[in-house]
Amino acid sequence: MIEVRDATLEDVPAILDLHARVAAEGKWIGTEAPIDAERYGKVFVHTIEDDQSHFLVAVDDGIVVGNLGLHPTVTGVIGIGMSVDSNHRGQGVGTALMNAAIDWARGRNDVHKLELEVWPHNAAGLALYRKTGFEFEGRRPRQYRRNNGELWDSIAMGLVLDRHSPGSPHVDA
Image (cartoon, rainbow, N blue to C red; front, side, top):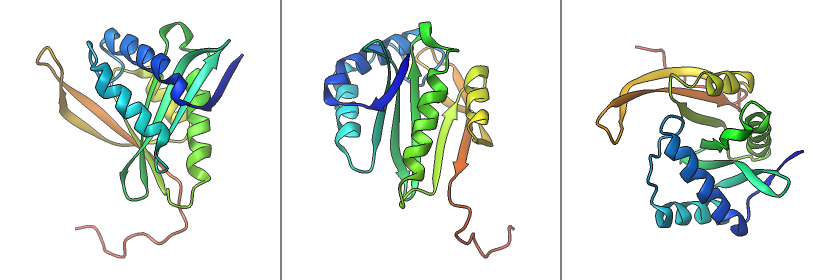
């Protein structure tokens, strides 16, 4: 049974291990192998300890099989990054993490939107994000240079949480 909970500092080694394994696959996340474990360890610790950020883990029988970080990007907007162990994909781990992330964001008065980027070839990720309410916001052509020199596009997606505050009064040009 998958349990989603807040990450703790004790989870950081397992989160680092999962991040390294998914990065080594070379096609699901922006990070590529080999990862800088010291740098990412600090990032994960900061996310866990920071009041404006949040970190979730999905645990199966005591083992971290997925994680999701929520990080402020601009005022009121939180970016999402997620990894799921290859042996646990397609089993609801991503859905459970996304639902918990959305619940966390909806419980805050200072968050009006969630955003993420996904590779265009990640059909399962795109389907998951659409299923949880995210909408296509645009394609970013040749946005990220990979270690091998390739330039990969990304898809920007967002989930607006505040539909009650007024929008811009200005007409599009």
